[in-house]
Length: 248
Image (cartoon, rainbow, N blue to C red; front, side, top):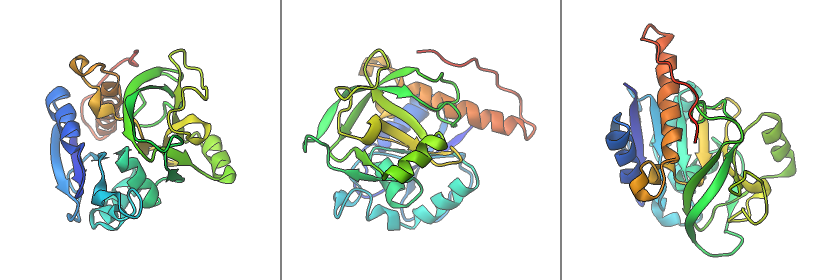
């Protein structure tokens, strides 16, 4: 069974949401990892949750990138193991240079908390491997600085390497300016590293893993990485886990 590590920084506030989704809904092994730890031995996936690490002083993620755990996360990622940064976690991954780009204030200059639709652009990551390209997921956002920006040169690299994983869209999967909640360039809602094992996304999948909360589409992202880890383990002698691609 996969073992998830949820990193906790001073100011994290979605760590328990992630724990609940992974431990109690998906029935996986899960532990909190304090940011001063220096090892991630024994974990199969690392989750960097949302919140306001260090109060978002200077800018979101700018101080968290210097925490001791970040060196372990860099080593974990370089070994090809899956890492997901959600909202503030995405910002931390960008500040730590594990993902490209930068974040600006929302175009509205206001904090936004509402449901959005995102379209799956890349199904070759651990977190989207059970989904189909073009699938529309309904997932909530909650951020004040989710306006993703990147230079044109780097944007071309993202396109070339299929590193754009999610884009904001309407219910029909159309990429429109009206469906872009924060002004992100090209409606980008999530990107990965060139290898595909490090994902950053602004929407909160952990907040929509059960219908009582208004939707379950976030569960598909965690199910995907559980499947991916199980398949990776099967190559090392564990039993095969066969799951057909999930549909929404």
